Image (tube, rainbow, N blue to C red):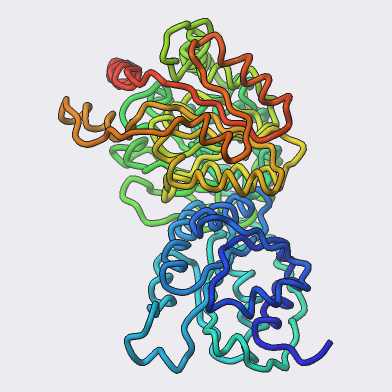
Length: 546
């Protein structure tokens, strides 16, 4: 190998740290990086928009626990990339963002497309920096990877000026380092055991950290030994199998719901892998008086409604196992748990035979759940459909229903589904989209087709911003500026090279989804949805009594 330039050394160091994919859009200021990728083991995936590139990298990171890179040029490329980077950071998904930049000789003055990207990216990343000399590259790359993957994971950013990228570089990659698993202190563990043994009605709130830690098995062992019911956040779905008698399903909607009764019943809430952004504590501990046992990789964020009596921090798997081994077997009354489960499950099953058209949200979800296997993956975009999916699409394994609930950015589903199919080609992957979110990143259909990724796009069409309409009606009893026009989505999908179906009757939906799964090619299903059910749900939630 001859003398490397900075860009080549950067790619070599990323390879050394195990980076396999980079998603992005090439630009003038990153041509040295693009050239370095030609002979690299890193596979570069050309996307149609920088936001889509970051969504793909973030989804890859969420599913694998390993960062992928995403690349943009300076100026508008970097600002486009930022939304997906911020989304990954708030969802605690590892990601490495790389931006091209103007040469150092232009940084002291107003210059074409130049912004201080390190300052701009600081609020939306765990760590970021600019490469100003080639000899810092090995350290920067290793720190970036470690910061991205260390609990809690997130996004990091490396800015590479175009003149630095072409400079001669003499360094080499650093040896890859490993990190040790941390067990909670014996003192805190003893306190935790004491408050669990003292509780009559403990409740576990399982979050995204269970999936990140691969701790579903350890959580199940604790539940079965102590017979403690579990409720999951939107991002914690699948922490406990959906058919388990102690599974109180999903919490996260504001206001009353069936699970509100569970929180009111609890005299101890054990949060396991819970991230504060998933479900504000004020919603489930409104007076801040219910004691909390915090089991997570990091200490709890300060919050008036989240008063940890004890904090068990470190490796979630290790600490859950330690709790289980030290606690006695316990039998607890489950009648109220059965009642909550029965009501929640009946609400979904009662719509299985619905023939209303446009199709009821509950019907769409019931059919989708019937068609997919337990390990298949659904990724929900953001909109009214997200609230229905979060509440009613029940899962048995972590990361089989992906919902972004930190930044909660519209447009994640189509590029996210493409990345999910890359990670799990053996599984069916479905993107559940509204027509608003779909149009924001729908150009990534071309990316999916070009890469031969047989994803299914299940489009809930209502010709407007349904979630905003829901809130407007709830608070003002009227709507404002939420309607828009749509193309013929089936023709649009066919133009991109997808197989496309339009649903004209509720009874068509399930057979069409079954056919889409069997085709093993990219498919779009255009399904009109009846969002009059939104306000009916609001009324129903308001009438739930514990």
